[in-house]
Each structure stands twice: as structure tokens, then as C-alpha cells.
Amino acid sequence: MNVGSIGEFVLQVRLRLKHRKTFEFRGFAVHSWLAESTGAPEQHYETFAALHEQLVETLIPVAPHHVVLEAGCGTGMDAMLLTGRLSREGRYTGFDIAARNVRWCTARITERFPNFRFHHFDIRNETYNRKGKLAATSVRFPEGDGVVDRFIAQSVFTHLLSDVSAHYLHELRRVLRPDGLAMISCFVGTPEEIRSSSQSAVPIFRFVHEHSPGVFVHRRYRPSDAVAYERQTFERLLAEAGLSLTTFLPGYWAQGRPATHIGQDIIVLAPTAGVAH
Image 1 (cartoon, rainbow, N blue to C red):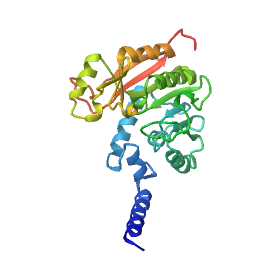
Image 2: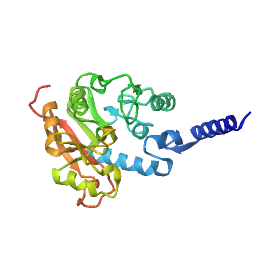
Image 3: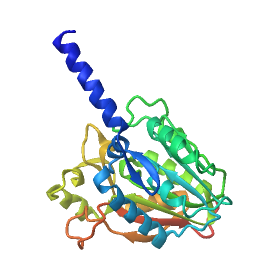
Image 4: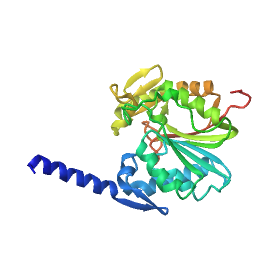
């Protein structure tokens, strides 16, 4: 075996060991590598989960009988949290563009909780799935019309350009019950806040390239890395989809905002009263 082959062998062994390492979370063994790849490394997983749990309980409380849909389910953090809240009369459906995430969630969560289901959509995305075969604008959310009580999308709209955001918002309105609620994270600010983001100490929060009117990106060559909207532009997309913004929790990404521990903006959406869909 030559030196190059030995080096490759050692690398593969290290990768396999890394992929096998797990940590305990709420009675589940979570793969460390998967958690890290979704932006929630082991050392911060519990902190992030506690924040997610608090936001859900405060902004869109979930009842045992509810139907919950989550876009970008990742390693199933929110699903695992909800296994202690949803009864057999309720259900959870999650979808993700990473097949490995869906395989893990199905094997670890669905096996124990059959009313928790996960779907893989091979959506093309420059940042997370460059070889994907599906256009995001062709995806139909995996729930029927008007049956979803609660919708969650953490760090999803922060990567969507306006055509995909518009499609996802219309799909959200399609599946949401008239009294349903959605909680999403995003970057939405005034023109001044977006302009001043060029001075941010966090590089990914610098939205210096205008991709389309009212839509700004961090990197011109890979726009889906991080996307920010002028509030007027985002509210127009909401209105066109038949949704209303009911709660806005500002994140610290924008310069001059009060100190907070939430980087992205958190907003709650509801179907607009009297608007047919």
C-alpha cells in the first residue's frame, strides 16, 4: 500500500468514526456529524433546542391533537421536542432537501412514533444541494388543503429568493387551516438596516448585493447562502399569498437593534381574514 492509499484509508476511517459518534438528546441518540452539518453542533444543540421550544410554546402553542408541518426538518430537533406534546390523534410531517437527514429521522423517530413522518425532496439549491433534480417552485408541500394547524420553518426563508419564497408562501397558505399559525425565521429589514448590514461584525449578515428589487444577498455568486428582504417587499409577497404578519421578533442581524440572543427575525403568520385562497 503506497503513501497515498494509506492517507485515503486513514481519512475514510476518520470519517466513518465521526459519522458514528452520537450524543443523547431527549431520549434520542443524535448523530454528531449530522447535527453539525445542519448548523446545530453538539455543544450548542440543547441551547438551540430550548430556544426553539420556547418560541413554539410562546408564539404558536401546539395542542396534542394538532397537525404540524415543518419545512427544513434537519435532524428532527423540533420533531423530537414535539414527540412529548403530540398525542396519537395529532401528527407531525417534516420535509428536507438532505436525504441523509430524512433517513435518520425516519429510522430514529418514525420507528418509535408512527404519527411522525418525514419526506425527502431532492430540491436543487446552490448552497445545500447543488445536484438536486427538482426546482423548488415545483414542490407541493406534503399535506392536504386546509389541514395544518401549525407550520414551522427555521432557517429556510433565509435561503430563498423571491420566486421560491412566493411559491412556499402560497403552499403554506394552501395547507394552513383558517385558524392555523406559522412561525418562520427570515431576514426582513428597512432599506437603512439592509444598507448598514455592510458594517456587521458577522460576515453572513452583510447583505451587500441587490439580487432583485427589494431582495439582497450576501454572496452574488451563491445567492442562496443568505437572503434579506426589505420589509415592504416581503409584506407584498405575504399579501399575494393571502397571509398576514401577526408577530415580528427582530433579530440582532440588523445594526442598531436592541441586543437579543436571536440572530434571525422570527415572524408569525396567519391566513388573512376574508381573503379566499
